[in-house]
Amino acid sequence: MTLIFDIGNTRMKVSTIEGNEIRAIENWQEILPHANRVLVSNVAGESALPEEVRQHPGCRILTWESAEATKWLKKIPAGLGADRVAADIGARSMYPEQPLLIIDAGTCLTFDVIDSDGTIIGGAISPGVNLRLKAMHDYTAALPLLDAIGDHPVLGYDTPSAMRSGAINGMMWEIEGYIRCMLAKYPTLHVFFTGGDSKELPGDLARIITCDPMLVQKGLLAAFRGEIRG
Image (cartoon, rainbow, N blue to C red; front, side):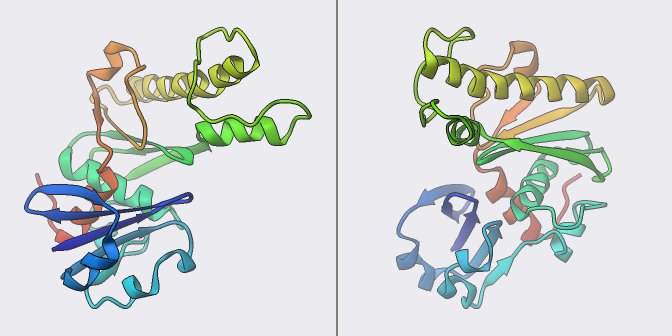
């Protein structure tokens, strides 16, 4: 059995894989002694990785410097987050011969562009929805602290709906803008969307998008399997 740890800025997601099925779990402490492999992506610092996981004999930790990463990707920027490295590998394992845009909507919204030979062209980072909402509260005198659950019409009808409109619709239009910009440069581009919901994107863009909430986990599996398809 393989355990997969995706340790992000705000939470730790743990999954198992048996056969071809990746399944999120909560009781990893009970399963850990029975795992033969433990694969880790960690962007939250050394202290965020439980010591019993680190000491497991099958523990493998992916970083931007890992040999497993450089088998898949070229010109990895120094310090690129392990979650982005894993997601990029996961995308390339499925579309190894196309230019790719990988979008991860988590605590931060990240974009990575990879050309058809696996070279990382560049990327971008901006605040995710909850960071946008929190910043409006933290850096103003009167705006409330909101979560993302609630109405977000294009034109808000009160302060909360206007704030959610700016945060949620603004982020979706930012995503749409990046996709259209990269499509102009790479007409055969394929887009991967993870960590969020792309249902609000226009239909002409949705057709080139693969939504995959397990992209990081698939990338870890591909990295430590050590084989490139295609």
